[in-house]
Image (spheres, rainbow, N blue to C red):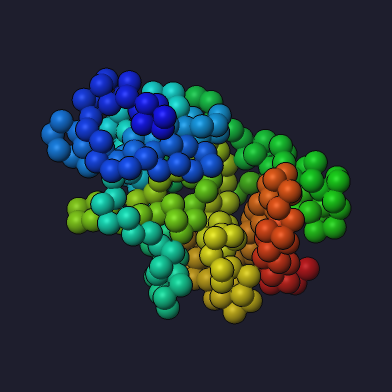
Length: 275
């Protein structure tokens, strides 16, 4: 049944399957080869948020992100990272500093100005937070309420011109595309706002088991601030805010243990700020 979903696009773009279907909570993916033999990944979005990924990546034009070969609403054909290597093994194998610096370099390329106008349908960072964190803060109080108050202060005094953010820049969304292409991002959201926000997920990543380690948090917050040219306090503020937002998302899915893990990161950021 899953392969049937891909058949119209295999015909339309003259593609050949080159692996098995991969299913995630948000999409169906199929490794393919183009008529010229190039390795690609065909991705079909399964929710509204994912439908904009191809549009965002196409606007980036292969600079800092995987190159888009073809796309239409909800469907994207992009170049494929044959190695499948992500930044996560580096971060867990004594090369955490290197992983953070690579991710910061990728983000710099994504945030660089483009001549073309930004794609339509993007979300303001305030709306991004307001949809989930505001109701969670009202319902749960505590650190979530503090996080929502912090977000409102950050949004009231933004730093720099807003950019098209990745929105989900964590270690598994930066892949090694090999010689000539290097490390590139995949799976963006559709958020516009202060660039400092994009670095918070490198500290909050719930898939990284070391994210709530105080020593790791202290060192990587310093490494990231230096590599990205950020004010350390601003990075910590956005990290606290994003950890609260991530906790709110977990609570929406009734995953309270995971939410507590994110709140532990928020508490580390608050402590580092001296709050």
